[in-house]
Length: 85
Length: 212
Image (cartoon, rainbow over all chains, first blue to last red; front, side, top):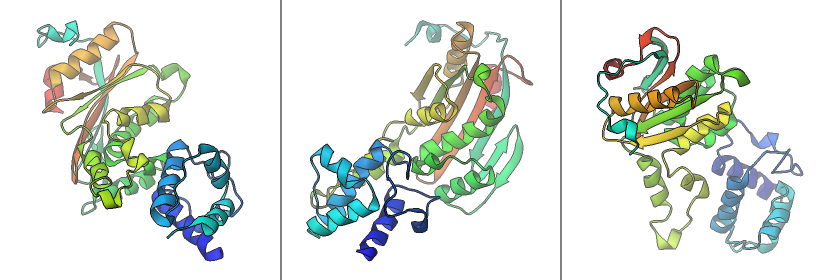
């Protein structure tokens, strides 16, 4: 689980071009959107693509996305339980 | 096409001036004809990052922009950071143009949808598949809410740029106009962005624009 969280942080930094953010800057339970990491709606769409491309998980329900993308912790938990890749 | 552009205007006199000018090409930046940065041998993305760091821009969204937006943003930033500082002087319109529109990003986006077996269109790339987005990025950073337009023309059309800027100013739609040519495709890029103002050293004229 820890390695998945680190992998996720690296992927998010790369895919979302968070040039000035390092893995150590992202807390596992920090909010990804809003006051936390400050991601926006386009970033949310990129995270949906990332889930599909890298883990074979297709998200179609926006409400579901809101829960899954709360933090690295919630993302990692969902991926570990639902990944097809 | 608006009426003012149809008028023969090469002899029109302007009461406005080019107050500031920023040029970027071949890994170098000039502001008001002074070389302020040179970093030869860098790809544009690396050069843009070096410029971001050198000028202490502190705007993380810069790294999410496509290359055209970075070029326009940097060119505008080095002018606006010293000319747009408070609410009183944010009434700035933008008139930009280039030849290749957003082709560089269009090609990148196409790569994400070429292969039906590896079909992952990127939302973050897609949003930059219009050239006027670069103007929007400048407006967002500096909270400019005046007129803006982006022309796609084969080459820098000084008459069009002159007339459009003059029209905006003469109709009182903005106090100043930031104009620019921002051309980029792969590693070929060139920009010159200039501010048309009530005061300045260089008269705003078609002849002078052709010398930029």
